[in-house]
Image 1 (cartoon, rainbow, N blue to C red):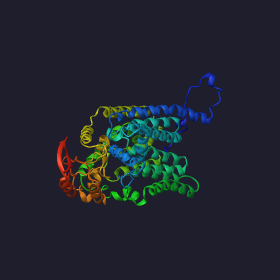
Image 2 (cartoon, rainbow, N blue to C red):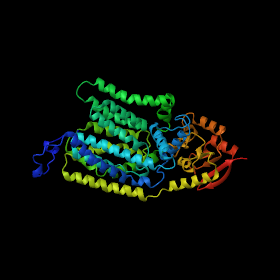
Image 3 (cartoon, rainbow, N blue to C red):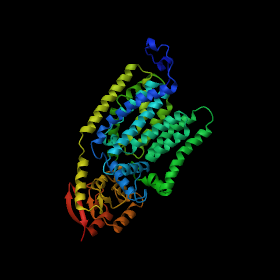
Image 4 (tube, rainbow, N blue to C red):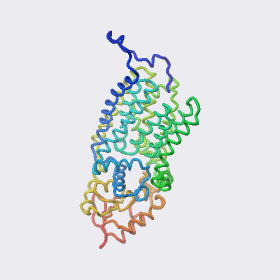
Length: 498
């Protein structure tokens, strides 16, 4: 924790009315209740306001489309990691499936509300952590700052209801529980983060640091933490099939997690998203840098959390914008701690700068066009017009949301060309092709197309490296069984030969 240079930094001076001088102090429980009763509505309103742009479009990015199609497949009897596949853990596909079951599967509005709730929970966990370390004002500061900077990226990354947004409440809760010595709950929170996205495991680093530096015996806390982490993951692995779970979440992504190929493209993306995050955190970075220059800050666990999260961003060498969301919670706590030992005007400046940056990013989300979405909508309308509700189609591209918008079932478990060519990893050069596919994917893909040929094939590659003419297996399949029908917005439609 940050060094406290004087007792006065923890005191709060207030004026006391004559009628209040002899009034007994509120019981601690009452004071706690009053604190959160006042703070929670403010943070809830701010969470909704900062995520207003998320309701503007039916979809923000292909990850949302992928999850929506997965949820429909699961609801139709699909099996996760067998007939429904992705490289991600299962919690979010299951959440989408549950929300669709309750609210219908034609709109992501309920998921948008769930994402706002996830951001609120993250803010509350950070506020509780800051309050326990530095007092009431710090708690309010951390909660407000987090929500202001949580949208400081490209809206396609910050406003989408995808993995990182739902992972962050678990990571923040893990650090909060560890700070309170609740080791089993800290382990369970880490497990929840890992089962939402693998990189959520970065939260285990600060948890273990706090455990190691606690007074007293360590054996029991270590066991409780490890059991809390291991049991949920083992249960999910058993439920989905241990070998399949391990393959799809860990071992089956060797080609994806590689820096070879498209180095300049990937580095440019990384630098761009770093600059965007720095702009969104314009109110946080100056106090952190200032305190680093004038004092020892302590808070080693927070620095380790930030470092581990940075490692998670680097993992796989893709630098997608939504990866950077994982950096925001530790940055917020470090800035909050720094502001406790700086003059009050620094806090005002940090809040104002964060509010201004937030306003710019919210305006960007409200005003920026989405040409890819318009293309997908035109494609989906054409697919719907040319097929019946019970017919299966194959959309060969990187926009799985086409299936969801068209209301048509995919002909394959592989919802994008990425798992079959490695293109979804952001590659645009030599690391794209059949030989870079997930192990065994082309074998399963050929079997699916042979057993149940799609009524319609849509080649949405539009000149990209995964075009069928560069893939012998797909090229031969189309040439032997399908006729070219038409072109819609650059995508080539094929129908079965008669």
